[in-house]
Length: 416
Image (cartoon, rainbow, N blue to C red):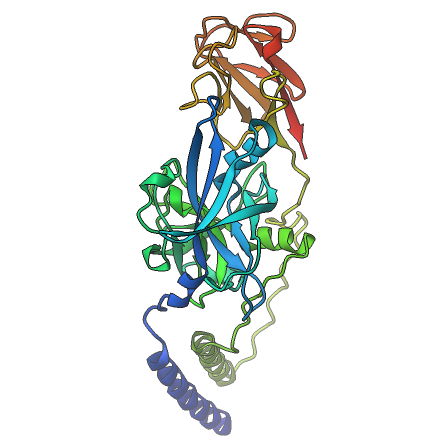
């Protein structure tokens, strides 16, 4: 017994020495890796409105590729280039550029996108030496509470490019916060990271960086209920898209056990020693505790993936040529006013008011909800029944409505 106690005391002293040395070696906070700015870029996209005038939107992106090589692929949010996508499909084409500096820009091309996950991949005509690829990492449950950094060019998403004064690396903004939660979004199955690192419209598509300088998320949105909560799409979502399209990228590889992890191991060893001393010091044997009863219910928290479809509107008006507008958790207004409507009709279109109606998709009921906005000419069901003004009407997928006249039919669809 005395030998065991002497051995435990010696081990205890050694563990205390390790804990002390490691605690002194640990920094209070991880410093932001300034080299990350070398991989971030300002993106702006343009699309013509119903009159043909070009309108511009902005966001942030970051380069990926093989480590040490000049990159050509850029990651951003799908909603950053959404109007450009729609313009290409229905309005005769748009514009898409990345800005390396105030007077240094280059055209980009859309490679692939996923509306449901809100991620898109762009490509330059050739690799550039003006930026470097960032390394992709992945946050795990053990990272809850760890410090993160959101990098981007934060201005409102609808600010036109004429308001941009500079787009250099040094003009990117870095905000600091921590990981508050990991969650899976209902309806889309997106893996999201909740953080309090402040984001705004221009941050969309920018990288969320961990203390190692690796990208763990793509900044995407803020909470409407709490101004201090923000969200980023996990890099696991974009890695799937990159792998599927054979797009090169590099992963962050840790450099072995960190001082923090070693400190945790040493602390655990100390606990084991204390328990050993207590147990061996008892003179009486205690009866073994009964084994806990096995659980009969299914293990909670298991994620079951399912294929989700995306709700969309398809205009059958000749002026739109089958234009598609996808619904992303917000109502879409339809009418002639390009300032508020996403599905815009030309001025003078018979039967269509300035702000005619709006449509959103109820994720829980899996139904489209149509509301006539007190239009002059009325919103009608396919049967010809007029919808009462300002009264929401729920319709199943594959229904249709029309605005004033049957030529202005809009299909309510679900797509993969």
